[in-house]
Image 1 (cartoon, one colour):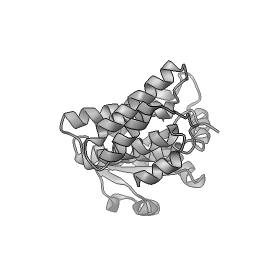
Image 2 (image 1 turned 180 degrees about the vertical axis):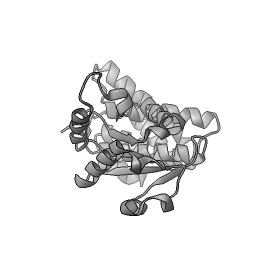
Image 3 (image 1 turned 60 degrees about the vertical axis):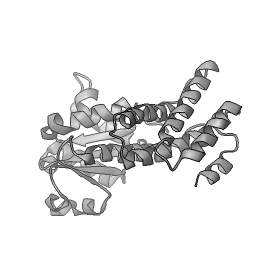
Image 4 (image 1 turned 120 degrees about the vertical axis):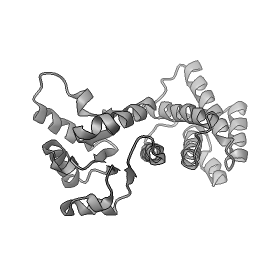
Length: 248
């Protein structure tokens, strides 16, 4: 079963202007599909009925991104969404906005034990860290589901060898970007429709490369790039098990 979106975005409207809309935009730039009510509820529909349909669809998605602000647990729609996630064992990825775990109400205290990120502003270093955490979840959840396309080519092999040699250096972001460019070229020249997941991986390398040259590249960026490189190779190498072994 394939979901129509990757993540359900659950938030209180009070966090929208100052934070949520920026996160939605930045994640969407990579090509990740996010369901958010302010964009995806059609005019004229019964809102509650439509929400129920989307929540059912969320079972097929990666999970729900929760933007937990001080008003989140006091909003009716947020409570409905959150209770559905809990009742149906849907994975949740909590981001605490302008609050800490001690501010979480007692009845929701299990969230304190989950991996989470605390952010006070989109200018915080933790903002990009949160994006990288979500990208990592996206890659890990999708890489085993995507159909493999085998590329047997000396150019591709040389790019892989270059990546293996540089994977522990910051320059590996450029090697991964070259692999992404070649894979994009391979799909287009062979008239193969490029899967959205592979497109997202290529977008990640392009966008992270901009950070690299603007001196905004971080260690967590490097972790994501390393994962992208391994996944791209895994998806497109004839003998990917041996290749992955050599990358460890």
